[in-house]
Image (tube, rainbow, N blue to C red):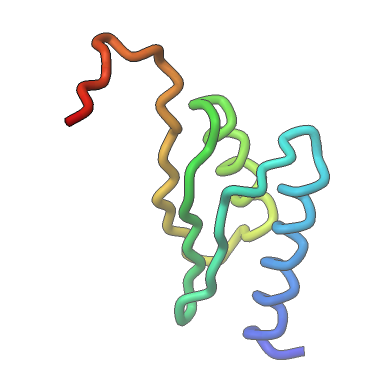
Length: 84
């Protein structure tokens, strides 16, 4: 099995874990970019982001990992929306 095949297998396993474990995070996209892996998308909380990164580091140990995970704003609006 080549290094690229191994990386693809590990990425697929990471996708399965993110979808099936307690975290059930489906809003994260995972792409192989050359020799590295990119995680991006929106997560529901800071704790969820930390858990996604922990799982990714476990599954992808040894591969360069880059991330752009944004925490969704769930705060109530501080002012009414103005419609024109």
